[in-house]
Image 1: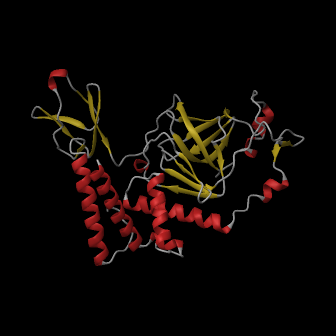
Image 2: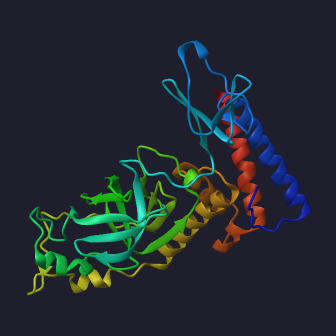
Image 3: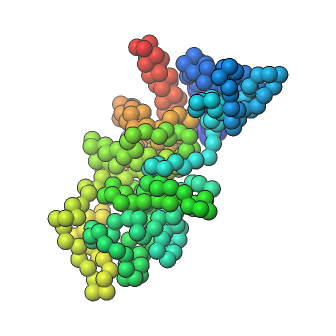
Length: 323
């Protein structure tokens, strides 16, 4: 409930408080050994030897937590992972970023990290789809691929010597994102999963949950088969799109409404501090339809947020009973 920017009346405050208390009690029961607060004792086996890591300290012969978070164990290492923390990149993470600079043979991206990420020209597929060496002409035409303020999806390839991230986009699922909304949520709400790309067929919307806290909600675009389609090249070696492709950039009203509805579901989850995944997002979207919310902006109101919190508490309670 901390940081909740929704004005609630007295009844709504009581209902929301009850729902959050129920969620907290369910979480404490299921994670009584893992969740710790400051000065809590962490149970360890001293006979096997213990390595005290980040967020731990020794007090009166016991290992205690110095942070609020979850206890993690790797062999003999014991440390506390803070719940509310900045994005810590790992190799293989799917991220969404915004281009802030076009530099020689590379683009610099803002990815909600302490340093900017770097996407090399050699680390992505060219528009013509041909695997070849990058030439000076390709470098001159970099702005025809990405330019400043473009939203890009990529994968973390590794770290450079200066600590900045090295990205790669050697797949059709990566690249420039258009006709949608870019949302910023706390990174700890987006858990690492096997699948971060979601195509919601019912609404013809693409959803990308970036591990860095950037979430993309946009109109679904069918990937192009680079082997079947011929790209039209400019005389100077650049790339241009056909007139039909330019006409197809118009997004219908129904698609825009669906994008806004799903984006508002993400905003509600972020406001309440709930984990963000496609299953919960679709439950919130279906709830908005069942309430016949004609005005999509009503999803950001106080009553809808309380209903979502109550629904989440009920869902987790039912899930625990089934176990």
